[in-house]
Amino acid sequence: MTNIPVLEVDNVGLSFSGRRILDGVSFEIHGGEFTGLIGSNGVGKTTLLRVVLGLQRPDHGEVRVLGAPLSPRSRSLGYVPQKVVIDPDIPMRARDFVALGLDAHRWGLNRRTAHQHELVEEMLHDVDAERFADHRVGSLSGGEQQRIFIAHALISQPKLLLLDEPLANLDPKSVQEIVALLHRVASDHRVAILLSAHEMNALLPVMDRIVYLTDGRAASGTTDEVVRSEVLSKLYGHHVDVLRLHGRVLVVAEPGRDNDDIPQHPTLTIK
Amino acid sequence: MHILFEPGFFTCGPVRVALVIGAVTALTSAVVGVFTVVRSQSFAGHALTDVATTGGSGAFFLGISPLLGFIGGGVIGAGAMDLIGVQRIRSRDMATGIVLGSATGLAALFLYLDTTTSATTGATQQILFGSIFTIEPATIPLVVILSALTLAVIGLIYRPLLLSSFSAELTRARGINLRGVGLLFMITMAVSVGLSSIAVGSILSTALLIGPAAASVRLTNSLRAAMILASVLGVVATWLGILFAYDSFYWIPSGQALPVSFFIVSLVFVFYLISGLDVVRRNLGWLKAERLTTGSTPQSALALASKVEL
Image (tube, chains in turn orange, blue):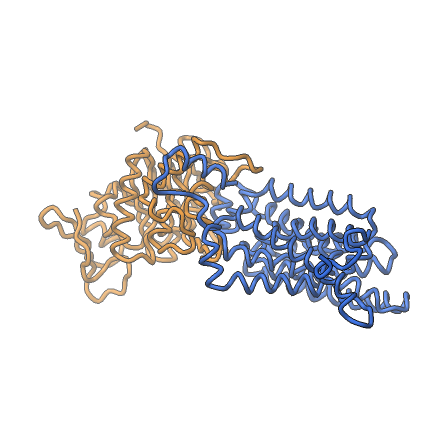
């Protein structure tokens, strides 16, 4: 790990037609860290990720990737957007979509080298996608597609992988598999991860750092600093229990709260 | 031999020109068509044929080459759709509809003027439904050059275009000029529609653009294979269409040949129907199995992979 943060978000603010979306958001991500960007739907998680990617210019503040101001063509970033809908009618195999991650920005038809084909094979192996590598991307299940999108993003060897709600619309088993997979590839490929989610329990076993977004403001800290009853209760604006039982951590909301961030009935046990 | 090829088929000059023009335009349409289908831009493709009608009928009225009118009209239409907002999915349909509507109105005016000034209904028939047997041999080089340019542009933007067909966000995040790539593709679509307009007419050029591609994406598992199959289907439909139209002269006692476009478009439709049959899908499985996975050595798998991918 170097001392230069992989990502520095410095006092970023952004408004859309008079509505404040982000307000003085600052945080840092260091090499290899797994960071969860947590907040309810519509709180600005996607906007923040788009600012980090350089797709959205902030009104003020700065984003630096590896110490340098962000350029829109930064190859240091990998991205898995929220909604990629690939029609099953499209004749494209999963492996071809992964390979596109290597050279989608290149002009022309230059043939892929043997080395590049090896990279694709390795990547398919790393995300455990060899079984369905020759199936059409559109015909795969949500969890399988997510693996392919992750491989597509990782194959260009970015330093930071951004994932926008990759766990939404997945069944609990797939959620656990994808989280474990991300944790594994992050350490294997020495890539930092910034993953947005509205529910943090599934991420607690692997998350090093939390950036909690609410009302356009961000609170960040290590998971141990943030996942405490008094901190979370303040962030959510109502009482939240953090239970530590036999080395497991569990976040539970006050019963009767209409809040999709935290389950009222614990479904997952962690750590 | 005479049952299939009526006398004089291969020695007839116009037939030879038709075979060359038909093959070149069908091939270009097939390649562009696969991307049109993958990008769900069939409606935009059809709108371009209407704008090509306007250009072609306008060119006829002014006494210049309808081919240039078809292409010029299409390119202007592509630019107009881009300006109105074809790059955003939601305004895409609207932009397409607006351009299509106003262009067709203009085409009505031009076709009226064409028929009244030349005192024949031939203009309307030629513009809308093509007249592949009346193409000047001197047109061949221009058609070949324009086709080659179109295919070269597709080759140049192949990968950015492919990624942008799936996700605008992923494409922008890679630093690709999404709008530029989309506009370039619309222009190739306009040129390819213009080219097939001289073969099957402006209205029916949609059929050559969409039909072979739609059949091929059903039967293949990679874009490259789809493009090759679509080209074969397009060229075969065009050549058989020309043959049947030539032969039809001898079918009917009155001695009138039936329109080529009717045969070509019908064959394309038949190919599409056949591609949907389960028995075809099952027996053409080899089209999808472009790569051996189990039982092959890594080297041979790699060699095979590098062969099948673009």
